[in-house]
Length: 244
Image (tube, rainbow, N blue to C red):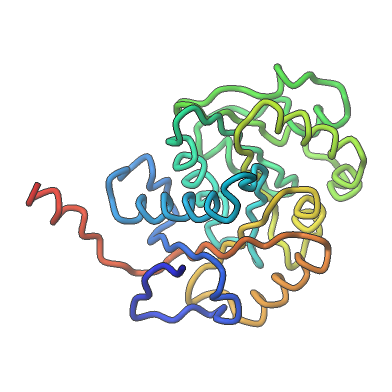
């Protein structure tokens, strides 16, 4: 199943067999325009992820991109909100970008102990994880940024922590750095149930997308599909609201 095409072609047609979603601007659309067409596209992405395996849908999902600045973190927040609409679901936003974290900033929350301290064993889960203003969505921030993120994320303790979090939450969305130049996303992708590759339409070169895709799969990651940002689509939600 494919999402409808518009007049712009995706630069990653080799992986068009995967699920795709488009958004129009780098903002938490699910909060600002929850009834808009872009919000509905994130709900479609949510449904596609769940439909991949109804009895064992991916519960831990790495969100990454080939390069920095492709709208990855905002897409992660939007998908988390869409996931939180599932009845009884508890969602964790995990900011594992230990180079340029941004989830706390987008949510208007101060920095505090988080993933780094949890992996090091200096902070318990109940203190590291905190609620957000979004119903059914919790946050695990990065904590104090380490000097060598890849070394920290490569420890066995990360696998243990991820397992503990999966026992507490229905879905874990893991925001990671760009995968083409930083190995963290591939490391975490090999541990997670799936990976969504965020691509800024008309900006990211096709060969960069393909190289990233191949790297993630070579490292043992399960790439579920792509999430396209900055596509121009007509929002018809206002038209339908007027007719309702």
